[in-house]
Length: 239
Length: 239
DNA sequence: GCAAACGGTGCCATTTATTGGCACCGAATG
DNA sequence: CATTCGGTGCCAATAAATGGCACCGTTTGC
Image (tube, rainbow over all chains, first blue to last red; front, side, top):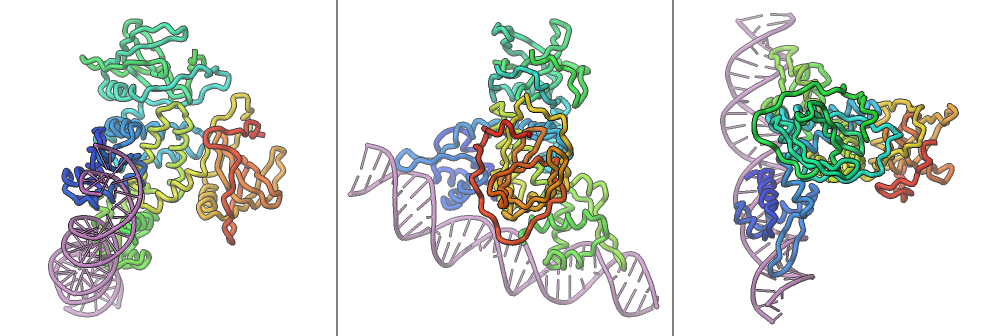
């Protein structure tokens, strides 16, 4: 078995969350204990946080944070990469925007073709700008990582997205919308969506979104989102 | 020489656009003719379109389109990737900072080990924050891409860096400093360096730096840069 | 026609990297 | 104290990469 495939296999097993012993991994993968230990060492070098416990009942365990992230890696890794490239573009201090595209090209080469398609599609939906300095961003919450998979699915398959939104006054409402774009004005993130009930575009701050769920049924159609690429006319949007 | 490094080297040479002979490549790279031929075959498998001509005056040539698309990582491009990850971290809206690390791990997997080391080392020097809204950034210039290679070398090899700096009043001075860190407060970039002449830290706006050159000689030592990770006390630094 | 300069392939000995087995250390557990 | 873990150092076995060689087909220029 190829070294790279083996590493992937180990990560996949560790992702299950249970404590795994080196010998167990070795058996399951079909390699020796020694090799697995070398692999673990290599994975740690690569940035995987793998905890280990000695003694009876001990073993290896992927750090929950690392596990959480890598669990979604297959689905969300594309998103993560997009975001880093997009953030890069957002830096705006040319010529670095151009370098971001180089980064993207490099990334694309490492992904299977179908993911490249996904990546490009998501990139189309992503708009990055800068918040005007006068914006008040003191009440920024955190964005739950758990939101992403649902959003990604909704964007890629053009399915309606249902979620709970807490507005400025703290009032919670349930929405079902057609996700059209993602607007990043660091440190704030917005979902720009078409609200069929109200027949208009609405923007939602991601840190106020919770419990997202993809709604099955017919795909919605892409609409012309009322802003162009870099320029964002939503200067009053933070409210 | 590592197989991956060799492939990169071959692509780099071919990207120059000229016709290259197998023997010429072999000499330049320091491998045998046979090995280069195997590499070419492997690169073709990887999707590189490499034309070949037999006979006198013949040789290998990278398809122009392929050359454009397959921009491989050069030194500066590593920097580009770092920046994208750092910019990502700068977004600060967790959990995306964590996702950036995933992106980084993904990128690292595709890089040869020595570049991973470089990448990490550079990442250590990179601090990203946000400019306080009250800063005046109206006079932002552009940062020349040509600056990067010199900076990268200086950072990696801990060599002194000489450059020309234009201060607020437009007065140009020549400096020779020990680069300690890179501070990014979008859209501004600063070099934080130890100035041996003045015996103190100085910060330089990258858009006011020109004609950088690495100075040979003994390596300088890393100093404790007076700011920690995310928090940047240089609130008055834009001046 | 012929020699030389090219790319390209098959083969095999040599060199280098990966792997597995082993002994052994230290920590935790009962 | 024995057992069960992770972890390291070492070395021989094994697998992969490499280089050298002979050789083929094509093109070019004499």
